Image (cartoon, rainbow, N blue to C red; front, side, top):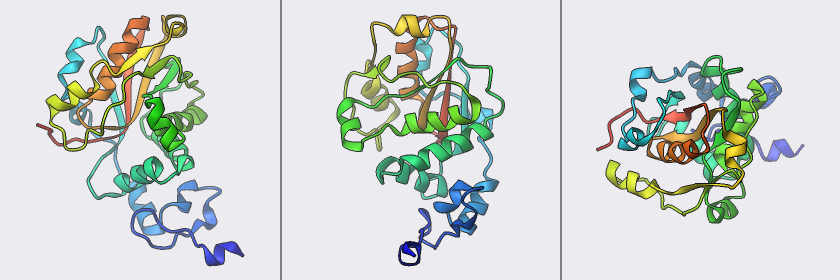
Length: 235
């Protein structure tokens, strides 16, 4: 009866959702049939679109592969989904999209030993109540059986302001040295194949900075995954 008075509203266009098939299609609770149909047609970015823009990648002692499931477009459905799971207290939506992410990036089961979400600073975590990248990772883990590393091992030790509107150089300085490792990190990561995950990759600076820090724990391999990637050039 409550659903008659509080219908599900599409997070992108505001139309009513038809969530009668939500058991089979969980996103039907968040996207109307038209937006859901458009979402199903989205293609992952081409590998040529995922060439790192940040010079921080030059500081990595590893050759890393970068993966992404969706291209980020300003004002598009993907941006609306990210905005809602990040700022509108919808962690379950992030988990659902993590499962979608895993389905679209190809076979990663057996290629990695640990998923490592890019951590939030404790102040930001307290404000939000959850880490959206961790929720994405849990959705991926549910589909791939790759475990999610405990958040205490890779930590954000410096609170960084939003990078929206920053130049490439400003983004790099903003996240340089922003992460740290726990005393037990080497024991956890040494010799492991690690996939670091973030919600959006714009220049790759945040993922690169996290990877540089994690490299200190001597993993066997580090690769990077963004739920969505900005493919246009950032100056």
